[in-house]
Image (tube, rainbow over all chains, first blue to last red; front, side):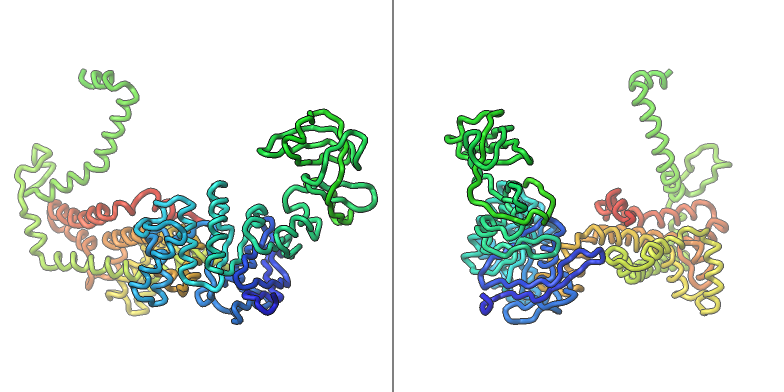
Length: 331
Length: 279
């Protein structure tokens, strides 16, 4: 990957006056890869994206895109395009004018512009909306226009700053599926920022989990989920039970890897406090010594469990973390 | 009693509302209607004539005013000064307004507040001290001197209202423009400026009207070489019957009415509120 890196960040540091920011960031994104920066708000993920886009100047380090050092270039001279979370489109311009603006600045002939606008609007499946104003469109449609406006300039890299977080849950899921498809069809390199771990898991080739300005883990979604490198990642990604077995380490086990057994068997004992039907599976909360634990199981195999039942818990696939790393807490 | 009949027909609440509304209308439109009436009167003397209404209507005083060479030239001068003052004010204040809206710098609040100073002092006292400086700079009785005085009164409108308008343009919209290849100036020209235009129009209207009715400063600095309508009006009120003054007043009111009706959609409570939001 090192040789084919499309984007390479080396030792990037950007600190704010209050001490927040990122320090010594190294990151490589391969050609045609979709990499997501994932973390809670304030972890520095947007800072990195804005440094790449040119909206923030790095204090130290270099940003190299497609072999060109762009560290000191202003945004208008960088071959990147950004999709913002909101306030994206220019409300005084029609959809056509929004898409055409960048092309006009590049002195592209009028006929080419019209053709391009048509093509990219159909790519994001809002054909024929050229004459509309952004306020006449729904949130999802506006974000489609914003994506088309970014792609029409044929950027070397697409930057997306929580592009779907302002949308309804249903549209959000639909949009990320379409984005993934467009990204694969065009083979475009994408750096994506989100705080939504489900979104990151579903669209990314690789996920960068961040906390407090540091990279916790860079890996494929499956490995980040199955083999979290740190306690933070284990807690942040999905649901996780932390069990203290008294040997100085914490056992981290996913609810789907925690099996209910008859009382007396298994490594932990407890009493069922709630049973919830979540579609095709059950969420069973067990009050055990040392705190509540969560288990997922298929509807049919969990049908016999009732609130108040005493059960044993068997720990399946798990990871171990040093106990003193952080105060014990259930996920 | 007719009034009692109304009172009972409308109910107490509605009756009070109607009364307040009537007082309101009289208070605002009474003088205006009266001025209009007198402007078209042949002779008018409220003391001699037994009736409130003028005996005969005519365009006599319009003819008189419009044939007075110095009066006509003062009308022309007023508009030239108002247009120039507005343009100059735009040039000076828009960059300041943008800076107040977008940048952080030491003393920002003080500077923004300082644009209010000209409107906070009793005008005449301020003008007298300015006149001393103008004498030293040889600006007394000159056109640039008059323009400067007019500019002074417009600073607050032209910075505060556009600053609010600029602030309402989200920064992401400028960044999006930069992102697709616009230089900072192109982003301002094609995105920020058009989006802030309603606020800027409001400021222009206020500036224009303020300049059009500015009298004290012009009287002090411009006379005898430069006399705008309001300045000439002082003389007219002393030297001619009230009817000539009324004609002048109507001439001064007309541009206001025209401007306000043309730009009615910009001049709303919202635009004003946005303009005076402090941050």
